[in-house]
Length: 321
Length: 297
Image 1 (tube, each protein chain N blue to C red):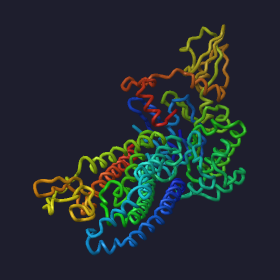
Image 2 (spheres, rainbow over the protein chains, first blue to last red):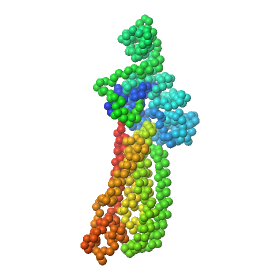
Image 3 (cartoon, rainbow over the protein chains, first blue to last red):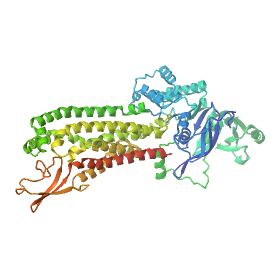
């Protein structure tokens, strides 16, 4: 799946993370080539933040491993921290600091810190260095966080719901800046987001998680090419359809089916009167997000997430998805 | 990291400096006045000549003037100050990072969180030790003349002399740091830290009052001329030594049985009190570092 000769920018091998008896992420295997912009999609609680936290070294894996540019991520070690810039959900900053103080913090806590880059970016954005963080808008705070992440000069940039709290204009500007940084420096980017339209514009790679399981992983173009939307008579059974049925909507006479079938399977499986269409990015995502999740293996039954113990535990660790 | 620690604790450092200055502004003129009266009353000569036995009236008048009332008011805030200042500095150190979510930013820079914590704790502890030592130095100087004619073992001067003040400050700091990690909340950590700090403080008050540890010394003094006026408050003490803290005097036949804390116990008692506070400080800070290091979730 790397599609690249070099070392994968991000490679997970049977990665799993358990809180108490509840698996937040399980059996996650993928390999992303350098320079990709990866969309990380899934419902709340699917394990997105867990996956990002494992990547940046905020969490230790329960099983398996995740590696950034060939180096296994280990929780809270300087070399893991140096390889990934992380922009946490709600872009936390010290509200009593000035912008200049935040840059000073970045400089004193990161050996490869690029002060010129940070100053130039903030100057271009018109964010005054002497202003206190708490007096700035959410969009400006997000931009400061992004500036700090970029000035850290790590080869992988991990963004957790970076635009969730921003207005539409701030979203556009923020994402445009992420893309520019990726294009300019060959930075590999992984973005957890709910905003499908945004991901469609930005991402060339996709990771889709539901209930702690990886459902889709691959280049967006390949994934789109590997799925078809068929319009078939309602009476058609799933077994007669080519490939694996991901979603099916029945109307009076017809059924619209999204199926995981490549063109070869489609050519041999298509019956007269059936219509086949290319799937859109959004259709593909919605179909997988709505798909009933297959139960986790019986050997380790997942706990009821609503159990007080389980919930308290995940609340304590601050992991929300 | 040094700069980050300074920036995050700058306001607290300035506040401590301001409090120290306020203390010095009151203590120094008053201390100078005390010294002037001390020599005008001829006390230094009397102490050198007779160990205080020759001038009980002068000593009593000096202690009445400076050892009670306004002179001792300065000591009252110092009883609760170490507990209060320690939690104000300690509770946000981890509590606010966890409460506001800024730990995700702070711990994903290139400094591993254990080093981050050890550096911060080291620097802040150093600052608190400096502050505690400065307060102790001023108060010890301020009490100087009184300490020559009364006992330093009484609860009030001893809380601001020797090790007690600094150790107590570090104890409440450590308790509040650990509470911040466990409760993930600044205000909660302050309350929990202060309540926890009251435990060793109460134990030490008890050790100074109803229970004495180590047990008081006892001495028997033969009575001359029927032991007139010999009691707990006699000046100089019935033991004949000005620094001794007399706890009880009973007559038994021709003798006085005196239960007292010898002046030479000052450092023993300081080491017991300071040691208890410092042991708690070391244990709580060590536990906080260990918990943060171990935590993988």
